[in-house]
Length: 214
Image (cartoon, rainbow, N blue to C red; front, side, top):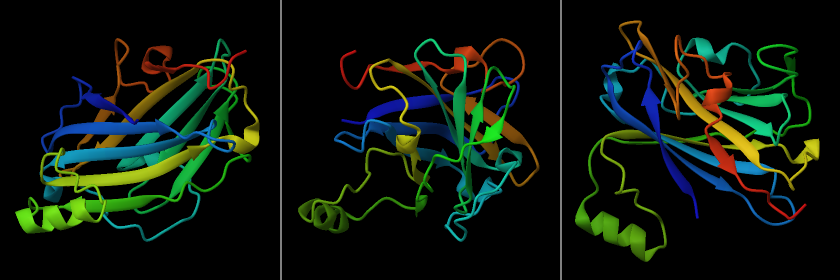
């Protein structure tokens, strides 16, 4: 079952466009799933006010995606100080980094696969017959999300790193939202005191239990 988690907007960067952002996270099971996190970011509000594409047009790896609308995930294993950062842009660009410690020793992480970013937008609620047809076909109509909303799906895939799965995984989830008026807001599961800082240990708010016994 996916975990549904709300992101909190940093008080120093209010967002006039969005009512909220929710993230659904699933740790994929099976032989190749324990090191893979399926993510679904859902932003609802005035989508026309956002400075962001709503369709995937790129699949390449790119740096500094955080300068514009970007959805992120951070992963730290057990008591280690090193961690990983994933960036997912609405146009399909992505990146993954490894840090040796807090904001130090950053390198591009090579042992990851492209996340296969997908997007979906809904401007108006579904008609009852359309909803019934989707449900009959076994398709989730997403009526639990307030309309209008934008959804981005991606997978943080660390399978090739062979990271330990007999320890808890500490996860941070976040987003940068750019509006057409030039303002940017910063969203996370939890914010540390002071300025927005997704790398801060306080932001690794979600703890996933070990996928197998030690």
